[in-house]
Length: 285
Length: 88
Image (tube, rainbow over all chains, first blue to last red; front, side):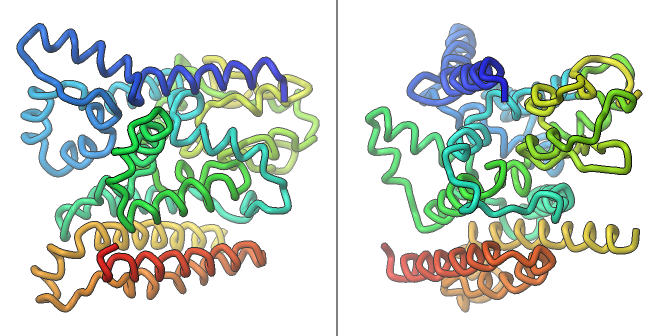
């Protein structure tokens, strides 16, 4: 892969950490500072102030609660902002900035291929992801919402806090949190082909963004990874390069699964004939 | 086409099961009070019971690494169950 492209992606990841994760959390602190001037008080500057998980539950099951919570903490709207961005520009947050997806993906490059689970082409992750989203939305009605300790995005905050000296963050770790870390960060993160097990199989915020992208990609004025059939030489490099297994080979063509593609543009970078391009227009030409 | 539909169906089922397992595990205390009348020990046996479903699904991949991963996951769940029930 192009070194410059990889460098840009790592810079975007660092920006994601600096904007959302403690001890920096600049987006959260800056927004909170603006809101404090209006009499709103915030205690913690970390990912939990802009939770991507609970607002999804509230939006589907209890819109009145969402409105009341948003009035207290408007940062809950972050996830919906990401959904709108995904509609027009594809899920760039997932592909470039989200630490929960990008840290395992980049660390995964250092793991020898023979040690990785390889499900690429053997398993379509989209149904599992959206099955999980449906279960995630319904679970509060059926018994109780899925706890923070199962959220990889939230767990990473605790790890980063500990790395930056706040060891108290790890005191929260329970048996369920250890499962989350071992399952999503290690086994289905570092040791799975592409390193995106959490994104592929579970992340509800990512699933919503991709759903928005899937709808938006049908329209000619939205940005997406587009495929130019005549330029394709069937080399298969894009299929191998995609960390989310979103590209599949088809006869004289490739298929891009918009429900999984996170617009990281690795495929665009490796394509020798520019058959894949990130721009606005029709999905394929 | 039929096998593709079947794979999608099982995919949704696996996803739903995953959500169900995590929701149950998230609320073992309150669910045991409300539904199981205190019968739930929080031992993750339900999670283990769901693993064969995952194994069935992944069997198509026929990779020894997947089978090994499932064993690792099962061991982790058992370890977590022991930690949970012993209050670690």
